[in-house]
Amino acid sequence: MEKEIVSNGDKPKKPLLFKLGIGLLILYPILWGFAAILPFTPFPTHIKATVITACIVVGEIFF
Image (cartoon, rainbow, N blue to C red):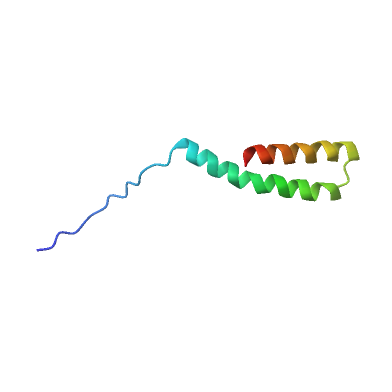
């Protein structure tokens, strides 16, 4: 007689730092994309320069 292996669906949970890392890696290209699109918006130049710089710096920190 063969025994069947029955799984109850319990998977090991991922740690919080792993989930945070994945979230930051997803957010990183979004910030860089936003920095690439922002120059074509009708905002004043000083606002665009500030936001683009912030996006690049924060994106690099997240990576």
